[in-house]
Image (cartoon, rainbow, N blue to C red):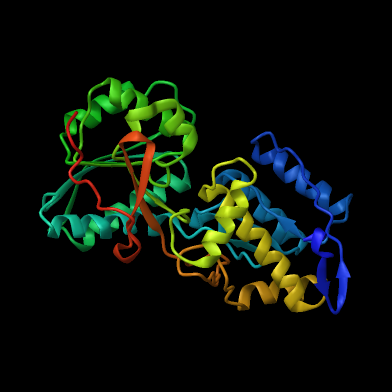
Length: 346
């Protein structure tokens, strides 16, 4: 933005100064740093971090000081509840993630590739993020009991080191599908132990985790055939996606959804300031709330924030294949390959 002369605000070019702080992955620290940025550094606007508990704290600070805040790392609906007015999140709700996966499963049932009803074992991180994933699956079971039957549903603590007991109970449940909600580190640990224990399911997912490069690097073939539902995938069609992916690859980093969500958060905040034509916080906040943001790299090509401040976008689904390959499998019209269902037995 600065290389292009800065933001165009009311006909004047204004350079952006980006201030960043390390919150040490701690919610209380993050809240303190945001207060410092506001009261001492006198920032005009806020960009948010990652992780449900951290983003929840940041949203509280934004609302307390009435400063527009946009994040690309908080998908739990709980973050935006309780009268939120000043915070906006580019990630659609986790319940929608679970429901997207169930819609995909229905197509596999109709193709006689997965059984009906599908018995499901759910494990989820013991946070609002995980609880909302579990609830999304249970809502699907309630709505279509002929399609889904939950036979196991248990939480686990974050940053686990030994999931063997939990996975033992999953094995005893004898479910057709294993549906987990986990952050990256727990996904890597759990899937390593899942493989070592010789577990098998006809459908396996870790929610939004699956195609992550770091997981593939550490787990290798143990990530094969895992499905995921994500907010962005580089294989999506459209010129905006291709342009962003080509741009991002110059960094040498993998163009994953984490980066895409951060990019969209910044792009929308900058666009809101320019569209408003002023740094007036209330007016910028109103622009964020009332505008449909086009030219998005997210599914559908636009982002619209709901009344609670959270985006309402759809998800796309991927599946890992042998050799480190990942294909887009949902929605069907955007698929880059045919899903492999049920999971092949090794």
